[in-house]
Length: 259
Image 1 (cartoon, rainbow, N blue to C red):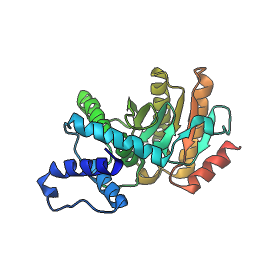
Image 2: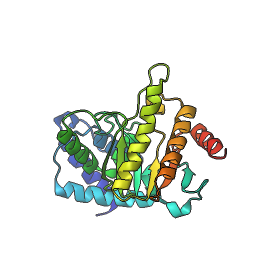
Image 3: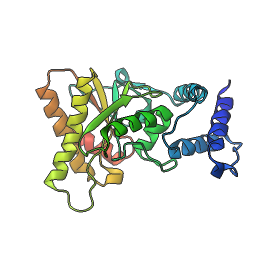
Image 4: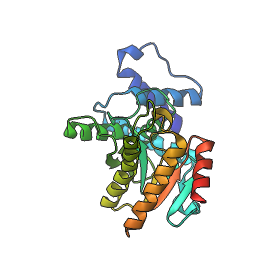
């Protein structure tokens, strides 16, 4: 099956799942097809899916990854011992683990084609990731606590694992507790990564963007927390700060890491 045939199959399958999609046709343009697939994957509830679908999906996402290109840790140059700064698509990074800025439901972003990191990670990991997150949440029996971390396989991503953490949401002035919770997100992810034997982890800018944590302060907390953890833990852990969305984040991290 060729790549466009896989794409058409996936679209037909997902559209046939819901009568509400009866009036939606499959676009002719490849980019429009990809956009529709992402939208359908984003809004799909974590329900059982056929093995045939997953086989086709996995083959499709594997080839999409090759089309988009990958970045290996060996391609990067550390800015400090054990610390890297990289601006790029975290879903194409070949490391042991990447960190997802999740929400308290921890099921991914349900907004079609939203620009958040949660949406991108779930899109390119495939349906299995949402199903795995559902299993974790059913076992917990309550929403994910802020400042904690969970871990899942990465499925169709080039990394091995995804670490999911919920950071603090800022609605007014940043409090000392907000800062402590954000630091806890980083520590929780590092500890979980250590527990699973990971030696490289890429952090997105947790709680900035949609959660409105000030970028400069968030970067200060992230760098300080990671460096303190690395110093206290002889366990080797290479950390990549991934400033995927904003040039301003890259400049902030670059300046702080050069001090």
